[in-house]
Amino acid sequence: MAALNGRVDASALPLAVGDLLAILGVLTIGMLQHGTLIPGRAAGVYAPFLIGWGVAALLIGAYSAGAAESAKAAIPLGVRAWVLAALAGFGLRATAVFPGDLAIAFVLITLVLTGVLLGGFRWLFFKITG
Image (cartoon, rainbow, N blue to C red; front, side):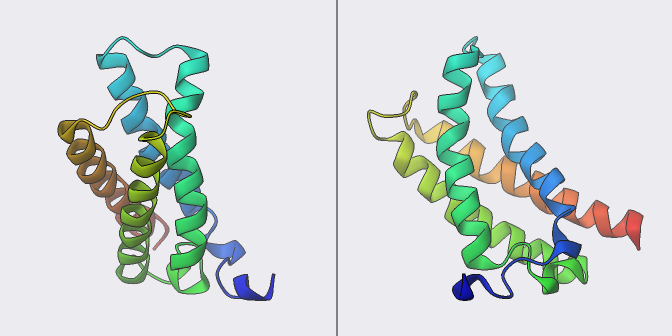
């Protein structure tokens, strides 16, 4: 646990709400648009990206004390963590363990739209909380 020291600070954890809404929201909208939002399948679609996010957010420090200080710090940390998480999620999704494929449109839309939403939420969070 010493390796995680300073990677998570309780004051930054409210950011997790918007981060998870951004990630799950984009994936859910995609499944709705493609008619594939089925409970068992949805879990398999969410899992690679949530696993990736959990690891990347810790490695990058998306919930570190610095992330809780300002949008200027929180947005780059969140976006960098998302890029790493998305790459991990795409890699996991490419295996036979998880449903779906890796169409280039899916990769680009998921990477960019989720990154924009995640950064936008973090900006809004600091705009509201001051």
